[in-house]
Every structure is written in C-alpha cells, then in structure tokens.
Image 1 (cartoon, helix red, strand yellow):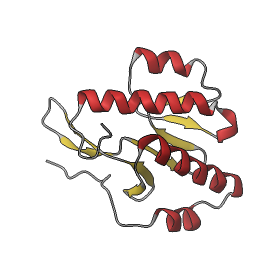
Image 2 (cartoon, rainbow, N blue to C red):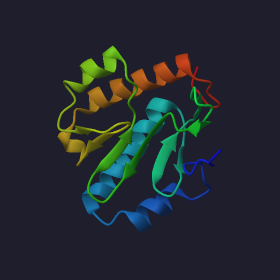
Image 3 (cartoon, rainbow, N blue to C red):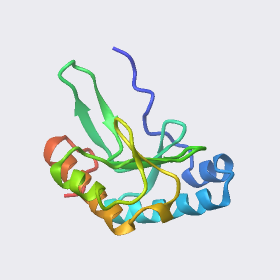
Length: 145
C-alpha cells in the first residue's frame, strides 16, 4: 500500500507563509484564514505536507482498504488561488454554496482567489458543517466534541 504524502509535519506555519506566499494580499488572507479556522475548529494550525495548513485531524478508511489521516479543516495559499479543504458533501453544504460568493469547485476542495470574494459568515457555516459531518462519520483523533 502506498504511503500518504499529505501527513502532518513539524514545519512552522508562519515561516511557510513568509517564505512561500509572495503576494501581500494573499499573505494577509492566509493569516486571516488561520485566525478564523483556529477559532472555528478549536485547533492550532499545523502544516500537512509541503503546502497545506490544517486544523485538527480525522482518520478515514475507504472500502478499498486505503486509509490515513487528514486535517478537519485546511487550506493552501497556492500561486493562482486558495484551495480550501473545508467541504463535506451534505445537503446543507450544497445549499450554503449557493450563497458563498465567487468560487470554483474541485473534486475535494473549493477554489477562491481572495477572501473578499466570499461571504465569511457562509465560510464559517460550511466549516462547521464539515466538522459536524466528520465528527459523525469518521474516527477523529483530535475532533472537537
């Protein structure tokens, strides 16, 4: 079985942002996302792999037998746009996306250019819905109860 590439690391989150993010607005948005996701999740930020900032963790296991750990909430300040790892496929999340703002949906994440393109109160609700879903459906090593 292949080893997961995206695992929690000891890299300092703020050093990563200082060295990786070269756009002033993206840096400010990254720091704001850290503040918000820390408050909403109850967890401090940790680096997952080389570019994902995650909060908390949960354990997943697929029918194929592949399993691993992933952050409950997370984001990556990629060059072109932010990748938000906050989405769980629920009816409530789908309804919230209709009011979210300007974004693109990927297979497992939401892409935004900047925080000013979205409704932060809807972001909070989507994050909470994802935390609730993960608490209910997965074994959480660091889930908020």
